[in-house]
Structures are given as structure tokens and as C-alpha cells.
Length: 316
Image (cartoon, rainbow, N blue to C red; front, side):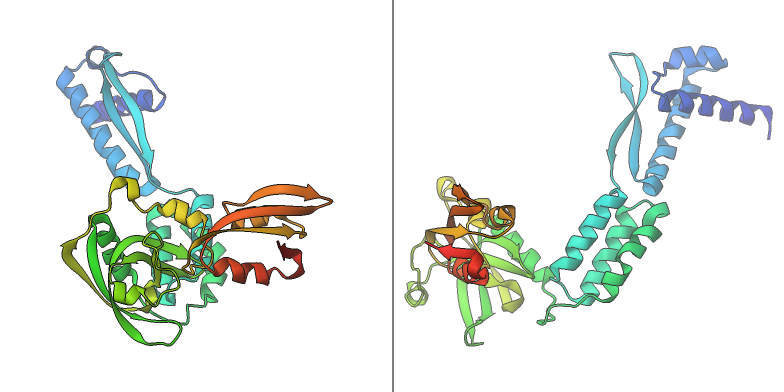
């Protein structure tokens, strides 16, 4: 290695050391310090930038060298950490596995991609070991339907306020029915993804338990046999827009129905589990560990849930 190359390496390493230790690098000062012109220092800084770009792919932390006008020099700035921590990726993988929402092939593919692209390479083996047993014994949903692309198309229609036409296999009689609807949300609950939509057709809605325009209809996405996104658009005024978050607080088990209030006594051991299950729930009274609770909910699902609690719940 010639002297000139050795000088450049020492110069680049010296500048890099200053940057990672939080110092400001002034081109003129560094040029005088190393006996070179400012263009050489600029090339050194550009080399450091390129190195950091390549290094970010491996360690997941994106750093860059920026010019700070107030300090009249260059400094190091971390833009963001694009990799997930070990604990974060483990939590996400566990939630995915517990959802049991996808086929085994889809689940394996998503887990591999998450770990490969979101975890630093040095930690990937450990994360894979922590989920390997659960992944091996993963039980896919009985419908065995791959619907991710359909779900994306529905999401696009929601975003663009486009009508969709679907052929849907009903749960109650397994009949396939044709519907034209206004899609307003995609939601997930206990193993399944759902389309929430409004039906315009009065001839269809006349057989429903609830005909009020403010109550949406719910469809399991894996039961959609065909989907067509139409060019026709619908308009919902901002003041009347569908509040997905508010709807989520008030619906149980994704059964449709009207909005209603329930009140019950709970004598179980964990009131927090009740309050987490029913986000709108409020404790009205407590007497010797027996809580009187009220909640606002959509649909008939709440009736199923209340019955499932046995003698811990008494409906008032």
C-alpha cells in the first residue's frame, strides 16, 4: 500500500471517528489538519456516506452525514432504525401465529420475510428458534382459503370509495348470494378477516333483522367467492363517515345487529379481562368483588359472549 493510500485511510477513519463520537466536522479545519484541500475532505465524507448506506442493510440502523448550517460543519444523524428489536419481532411473530388467520404456507412465508428483513442477521437464528416449535405445530384455518390479494383489493376500494360486487357464501345455509355494496372497512377478529359494508338494495335489506342505514353488514372475507371492484363511486359526507375505531369498540364476535346497551353483574376474578373484552364497558358499582357493569355494543354477539361466562355473569 502506498503512502498516499495509507494517508487517505487514516484521514477517513479519523473523520469517521469524530462523526460517530458526536463531533462537528468542518471541511476547512480538516483540510488544514491533514494538509489536503477541501475537495479531498468532501470526497472522504461522501465515502463515509456510501459506507453507512451499505452498512445499514446489515445492521438495520440508517445513519447519514448531514451539513448543519448553524454549526457550520457536518455531523452524524440517525434517521431511523429500520430493524425490529428481538423482543418486538418475537411479539409480532407470536401474535401472527396465535391469530391462525392464514394457511400454513402463507404463515411460514410471512414469518420468514419478517425475520429476514426486520431482524439483524446476527439475531435471526435465535428468533427462529424461539418460534420454531409453534410454527411446526401451526394449525391452519379449516377454510384453507388464500384471500390476501382479495383483502388488498377491498382495501383499495374502501380507500377510493368504489362500489364492489361480491358472490358470497352465506354461513346459515351455504347458499352463494350476489351483493353490490359500499365497502367501508376491513377488520380482524378471532381467526377471521371481515368486510364491513353497506347495502343499497332495499329488496335485499328487507329480510334483514336490522334495516337501519347506519348499521353495516359484515362479511367474512374468506367466504367471498368472487370480487369485482366497480368504477362507480359512492359518497359519504365526512360528518357521516364510518368510524371504524368506534365500531370496533362496540362489536363482539363480528355478528351484525343494532346498537344497544347491556348491564350485568360480574363475580369472576379478573374484571380487567371484562373491561378489555368490552372497550365501552364502565363499572357502575362494586360490592364485595361483585361488579355491576354497563356497555354499549353492536349486534347479537354480545349475547353469545355473556352466556359463555356461565355463573360469573348475571344479566340485569
